[in-house]
Image (cartoon, rainbow, N blue to C red):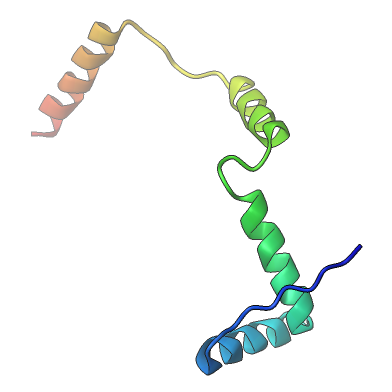
Amino acid sequence: MSHRLQVLLDEDELAEIRAAARRRRLTVSEYVRQSLRDARTSEPGSSLERKLLVVREAASFGYPTADPEEMGAEIALGYAADT
C-alpha cells in the first residue's frame, strides 16, 4: 500500500530539486523516492545484512600486522628518515 508524504520546501529548494530530477530525466516524485532510499541505506545502522557484508568483505583482505612496539619503532624510523 502506498502512502502520501507531504514536505514543505522553500521555492529555491524546490527549484533545485526539480532541476536535479530533470537532469536525471525523472519526475520530482521519483527523484525524491530514490534520494530517500539512498539516504536510508547509507545510514550506519541501516541493516544487519549490510553490516555483515562489510565485515565479511574486510575480512577477506590480508592486512599487515606486527607487534605494536615493533610497528611503532618502524613508524618512528620512517619519520626520522623524512627529517
